[in-house]
Length: 409
Length: 103
Image (cartoon, rainbow over all chains, first blue to last red; front, side, top):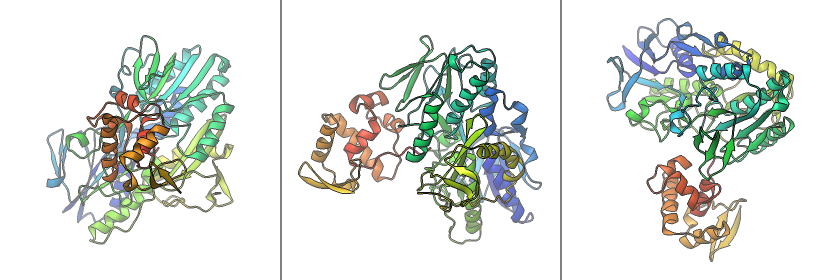
């Protein structure tokens, strides 16, 4: 019996389980997935929780609902990856051998990396919304908040879902408008980037929206520590921004098993060939999604598109053929902009987000880099698509390779 | 892309003044670019620049955090050496491409 081991049963690991079990002979191939947690979170939904749009039950389902029959599922922490021996040690003492391995352990927030962040104001006046706990705590806080300075800060690059902080401030603007207290809330977006986003055209469009919504942007701010007593964030070059409530995107890191196993870079992300998605260290190891050090967004869409390429290349490797499928870094993100509207960006390693229509050239129905009602519906419908189509590894009517058709240069 | 004469050397630069060929870099070129940025280079500066050039040659992606862990200087020190966008300025002076932030 040959063995495929999948580390991580999140978006990427689940998609791969479904794809591989569909095609690999059960008499010949054993597929095992390992994850430390039993709950699958619909992470794009966390953003909506602080504003009371979604509740906890909207974003959780048991992981086991999405693993196909014929896959061994082990719930355990991973102690050590021993690539030279083609084996993985689990925290429960079990040793798993593999012929091929897929690392899909994702990225995590590490508030401990920033002095003063996880201190006395943590979950009292400082919150993250990248964890269910943080999102729910912020929901409770907003229920009785009477206004003041709302500061959003991104601590470090890269971070998961790069548009979420933008969506957060847009939704906050709409939320406090709805409560009739927008004039009492001062919203500031503090980022280490040179502007609202990285690439020129998206930055221009998004900066316009920020201005329109009266949200102040402070760029080039690299967080050093949080001063809990004075309630301000302080950068390495001494800039200070005071807050009444701080929403933080903490430093993102890969799983610490990478550090123990000598497989990660300085932030525990796994060095990966950006085209083939194969580990740079081991020929029989592939890396999917946020866990990899790819120069593209850490986001579900990237995992979904990357999964197609990884699947093809893994099949090629199994059959001894060259790895011909090439990942282009394709990312596609809905951006909620508040008041029932949204925008979409579509880009890859080489092409910045451009205006146009998507996915059908000239038709849409979605408008790239435009602020429309239909784009918002896309985001609303996506939760259903995620649970029912994407995780099951089924075909979606969007190519994994980015297309220039419909884009305007 | 344009050719620019810096410290008596003809180097290829992009529209933002970053060298497009790191092999054209000399210490004199560095000093000249640094001067334009208002920085007087010391030995410590050159330690950082050499580190950046080595990492770039190895194909490693550079971040402020990574330089801060290099053992040459910490992040605060890097900001003191290259005030305002430290990685962008030090990369420009080191003759390597502008760091890209991938989000």
